[in-house]
Structures are given as structure tokens and as C-alpha cells.
Image (cartoon, rainbow, N blue to C red; front, side):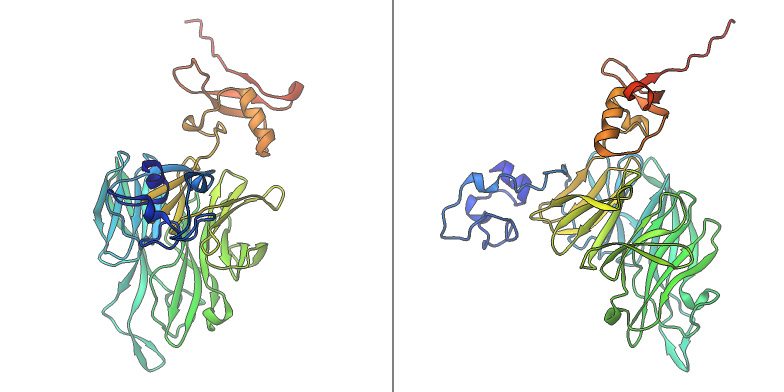
Length: 408
């Protein structure tokens, strides 16, 4: 029973009767092969239904608010998330929950991390009036703070971008409609932030705004009509590999959008309520929150190369770590699910066992790695070392270590 409880949720003391599909609370309502009350149920029916298939379980402690709105993770494996409270919550590397880590003052803020900086987007109510024609509007717009983290603590707190709203950006609509809570946010390695903003009065309008690392704001995309009716809301953003443009979930499609706002559709999902996150340099995970299906899109082949069904997932948001592990926030079973990135030699934490192992991984996953330096840590090596790996000579997989000889 303890294994079932870990996989599907529940609070001790617990009995098997609580895991029928129509039980209350319904831990297994959307899990295949699980019968309703009054029917015989066996342990075998739970096998192959665990969320840990293709995802490793990351258990956390404390009562987690089910209204998770954003999640991100720093280089020290501290997890930060926001919800319908006024705080950023934190789960530290020892899996201890700190629900009042940082007081935002507003709920439903958005988070994104670059190196040691935590970017916080939140709704701000400006007391100065704004107008749509002659109609005075509530002057709500989005602000972005940059919080510097040192050992998991905020050491610097500065305003990175103010008035993130199209009426305050050259070329934007000057008729002011109040902003809603901030939409999806992502940041590229250059420190350029992309964020979705919805403004509304009679209907919701959709913007995507770029804030360059120097604070300059530009309007990348704007739909000033009824965005809900036109299905033009942007549900998720993910960074591009070359620091130019970004990826979106938009109009039921997985798309690429450049900084000029030109949209290229890459894959039709059929449902807009999805989240995307980068996985390896050549992959994107697309998670459909309605069907609970995670698809892995490969940029090299322009196809879906893997489909994973997740059961019993009260899925909210997902993110990736600095070493490309993908975290899914699942409040139903009180767990965070983690899809581990393979050891591709990209960092000391992702050190490959040998050049040969890296070559086999390169072939099996089509990583398109080229000759160069990679992190290697053999079974008897105390620390990882950067070594040159040749993928082309005699089938590839040969590693060499540069040794500098000094006569003194």
C-alpha cells in the first residue's frame, strides 16, 4: 500500500478502497484499468500506471498549494514556485518547503531563472489614472523584478522592467486596456526576457513583449481583437537555442516566432492548453494538459519521436534545470516528477562514463554531437574532467586528455 500511496497520492491511514476509480477523493479517476467500487480490484491493475514511467519521482514535503502558477529551479536544485498566495514558495535542496520565501504582494506571478538571477513578473496597480478614450481605466500593468540568489537567498532586489504593457511601448496601441496577471515567461542566454501579456476590457487582447537585457522593451506580437474567440492566446513560451526568437504554444500549434513576430508552425497539437520546455539542445517536451500526454519533438527530424502518457497527474506547470532535467509540478500525488537528461558530457554534473558511452548515446538519441571537449568521469575517477572526444575516427568514441608539460 505504501508504494501505491507514493505513486498515486493519499494521506495515512489509508485503505485500498480509496483507490477505486469512483472513490472520494478520486486518486485514480483518470487511470486506465482501475475499476469502480463494487468490482474486484487487484494490485496488477496498478502496474504500468505509475507516473514514474519515463519520469523519476522527486518527492517533496509540506502541503503544496494546488494552484501552482509558475515553477523554476536554480543551479543548486532549489525549486521556486508561485500560486494564488502573495508569495514565492521555495523547496530547498533538502526538500523542505518554505511557503513564504519572498513576499510579492500579488498572487499568480511568473518566474524564470538565468544563472543566479530569478526574474519575477507580477501585476502592479499604478495609482495614476490611464484612459481608454475618455474612459478612466484601472491602471494595471506588469512589472518584472530581478532577484539575485546567493546560496538560495535573495541578496539583490531590483526593478528590471516597468510598465510592461503595449500602451507604454513605441508602436503599441495607445488606448489603454488594463493588464491581467502575467502570462508565460522565458529568458534566453543573453538575458533577453520574453513574456505574454493579456489586456482586456470588452475582450482579452494578446501581446508578446521582449525586454532586452539592457531593459529596452519592444512589442513582438499583438492581437488586438477578441483573442479568446480567435484562439490567439499564448499558453507557453520556451527559449530558442540560438538566442534569437522563441517557441510558443499558440492557436493549437507548437510554433517558432522570431523577433519580428513572424510565426512558423512546427507541429499541430489540436489543443492550446499545453506547456513546452526545452530538453537537450535538440528536443522540446510538449505536455498536453487535457490529454495528459507528453510528446517529445525532435528539431533534427522535425517529428515527434516519443509519446508518454502520464496518469493521475494534476498537472500545473513545468520547467527545466540548468542541466536540462525537466520538472513537472503534480499536486495530486504530492510529488514533482523529473525527467532526467542523459549524461551527454555537457557539464560536470552531466559527465559521461567514457567517450565510447557518449558515442553510443549520440547514436541512439541522435544528439548530433561533434568532435570537441566533453566532461568525462569514469567509474574509478574521483572527479570529472574535460576531455576531447572524437566521434568520427574508426566508429568514434575515442577520448584524449590534453597534458601540458612544464620543464620547471
